[in-house]
Length: 194
View 1: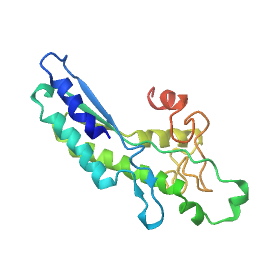
View 2 (view 1 turned 120 degrees about the vertical axis):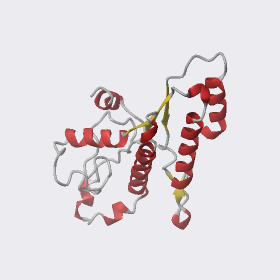
View 3 (view 1 turned 30 degrees about the vertical axis):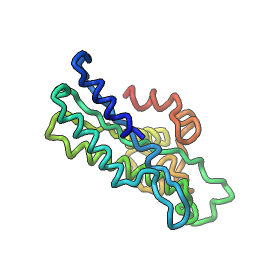
């Protein structure tokens, strides 16, 4: 949906009377990575290749503007979601059913989108104008730190990541997310003040 407004944003930033734009942040993917449809037709809201093309188009558009020659671009990765801890009655299952749940598949989709953002940022390293902020990793690290697991050998095992909803993992502590998707007050405090 941003594509429709992006041209207008750039026109405003490059107009002759616009103040210099020092920084443009691009923080997309939280909704794009969500799964829609069902069964074999299930896909991300914005498929990953299209998402990558869109992000690269936005970055390239900024980089080629003469009026934005000093503007820096910050790409912020997609954050994780927070799936509640499994119900205790589910503790005897092997976890394969949970991996097939839409929630877990969405969690892993958001991880792929976060990795893609960081890959895109890295591809522009030589410009010295584009940087990536790995919000996914910052939140995962904060969750691991809260659980006294940061630095554990298996801390980044996909079946034990904070908030993934599998029986071997724990949810983020309260107030990281208000509803599993939207940020709570601890995200600001934990992620942006360190």
